Image 1 (cartoon, rainbow, N blue to C red):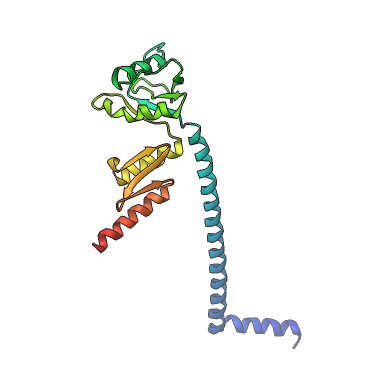
Image 2: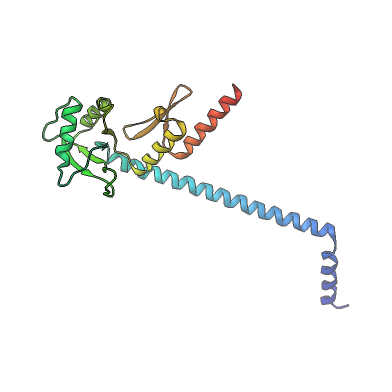
Length: 209
């Protein structure tokens, strides 16, 4: 019997050997599972690096807005002077008087439409002025206009998601950061994953009660 025939018959014999097939399948599955786990770990590591980079970029962008506020609910008119509009709102409703250099810039943001007035972004000359405005924003209660910090898109998404999942009254922004209170502790929420963790922890507390 030549070598080629011997190899052929050996392979044919192995292919009908259930023990061999089972052993081969086990080894192949083990290798595939190992490769899948390695890929999952690599993807997880990459996602973590991307999140760290995203948080760094968001921090830089939010710092650029640290003197800003965003005013909603002010009727939009043709040829309006938004700085005058903002000054009038502050002096008439917030019991504050600003000097002529307090406001550096004002503008409407977003796409113009006929249904809703676009919010007004206000940039002040100092963080102190911004903080004084935010302290007195409660005086607008009952009016159409309301004031918030000027947040990045990233932080806006976190704030919206946190308020929906954790309750609007339990979530707020301060100095460009999103906060909530969980188990009597102040918790900063800097990504969407943290909201899920808080909710999961809350369920565990309820289940153990």
